[in-house]
Amino acid sequence: MDRLNKRYAGRRFQVFKGIESDILADGALDYSDEVLKTFDLVIASLHSRFRMSRAEQTSDHQSHRKSLHYHFRSCDRPVVDATARFYEVDMERILKACVTHGVVIEINANPWWLDMDWRWCARGLELGCMFSINPDSHSTEEIDNVHWGVLIARQGAVLPDRVLKALNLVDFHAYLRARKENKIRR
Image 1 (tube, rainbow, N blue to C red):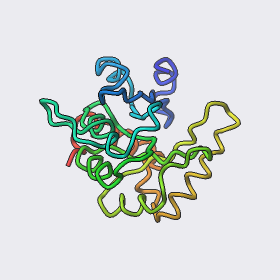
Image 2 (image 1 turned 30 degrees about the vertical axis):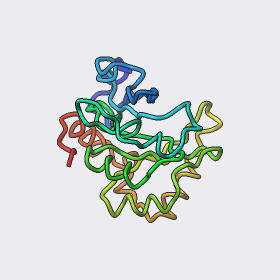
Image 3 (image 1 turned 90 degrees about the vertical axis):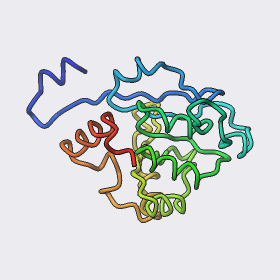
Image 4 (image 1 turned 135 degrees about the horizontal axis):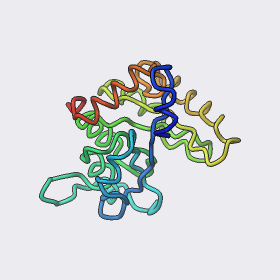
């Protein structure tokens, strides 16, 4: 990716490096901040423990940083750009934490998940959230899943200027740079 970016520099083409990092049982991520800082974009997501109650997934975590558990704790990490995969959670609190820390909310467009209800998109807009529509594809045949996420965003009245991946290259790069410099945190 670095070689491609160097080769095509200045030609309105760039490959961004991203990773989806698992939120572990204690709210930490499965990679260190040192590793995560090598990526342009980090998505924090739950990949297991789907049967936890709403209270378990969004309870306050008693740490020295007063971070919130799971999604909240991941939102408080300076390397996290987006959070995803919502189950039995207190979405109001997650949306507010994302706005506070400048973290993007993912609309997972995989038709087997579709865990971001359109009504929460509307509430996220009211609070000032930025969104990302991702196909959650694990093969090239699944890339078209993004269609389902676009439908959810449209139902929630999310306009393209509030969707990270709908930004042009200059604005997308500027957003990521500002996020890395903590200028988006509110």
